[in-house]
Length: 200
Picture: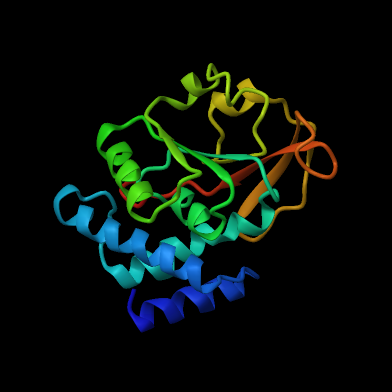
């Protein structure tokens, strides 16, 4: 990652109230490097300029970080080119991150990126979101789900909504009942805005 890219990342994260240590910045840089290589042949994102990927997509992905639990399994549905899932993993590598992506090419990229960064606590599931509800390791034991709006059926297949939490500027969080995974015994679902085609 160039000094200009790092500056843009740190400033953007700070504006969102997210602190990135040197290790997190390095991991995000490795992710962007890997995405840059894959984009040359596979066109995983509509935006291919590295500065745009950092300023627009990586920074935007950090918007949900402050809403995530201290521990537990976090799922990113429709991970695509790794926004926001891989950025979340880079900033919170201790989380058991599950990237759900049904398409072969993006799923292959995600697996490659996990090895390259590396993020040993994360894994990729190349399945449809609704099929993930049948995964015994996921059903009922999820701390947070990051998903497009409107949410797919998979979200309600795991839990049922109980009440709304105050929304942040870029995302909406709902509390869902489940295993006691945070101080209030809630399972959180964090929604992110749906990105335009080709920009995930």
